[in-house]
Image (tube, rainbow, N blue to C red; front, side, top):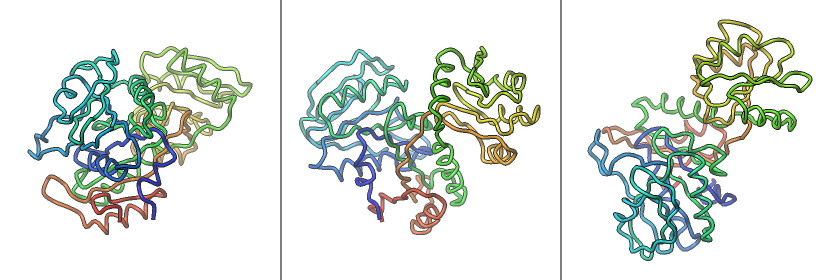
Length: 342
């Protein structure tokens, strides 16, 4: 049975993302911090800020992040000053958020910190790199609510997906939604190096492009990826082998294409990574069963799923049943950190 430390051991940067509020994402973060105590020098940051100190719906106190002396952490100025560890400023980054500049600090004592980082992927990457420069063994990035972009491979090498009872009162629904999210995040990578090179060229120039059998390509100017279906339908022909899309691919786009033409069959739709797929199980299945294909330029490495059987809304699942059912449905490790990973 894998434990969480052995799963993240090969990676320098790891993000933790939650399927929903209150699924135990911060508990997972604290669990890793606790397990690495005395073993790893950790760096911590967050994308954006995940709400208030207390959950307004359930009026429950959110778990704080407890760090040990020596931990390097990046947070906004307002929360840096509020954190109750003894601390020193290592760097003022010049990166600003609504709660002030991002400051990189060092904990000089054990204690609680609050994390809030920038919201843009590129800036999170920059902050993570700055933390690495201070000699940490690993950087843990706390993903904010519904920001599945936090799994984006442009930011971290590995991702932990947290799910739990807070997602739905129905255990089967929680498992279905989690399995579907994992399926999207784990979409197959395009392996043809020539195609990858052409796709990157297209994405530098436009939001939409078409690669042909002879490896020539065409770009199309669309304002947003949401309005791309009309242009995709207009440009599909037997010579097109790839459709390259910058930004999100949605149910509506695929539905419009399926209704308008059958020329999408056997073409490969390329998106940047699995966080850009906003697709329901039904539409995705119809598209794939009728001959459509979706691949990504950058794969996302989801190393495990963590479950939280307790909901702050006053109900909970049987943890053994939850664990067994979730493990039966996915092919990656599933851990219950509340049950100390059993």
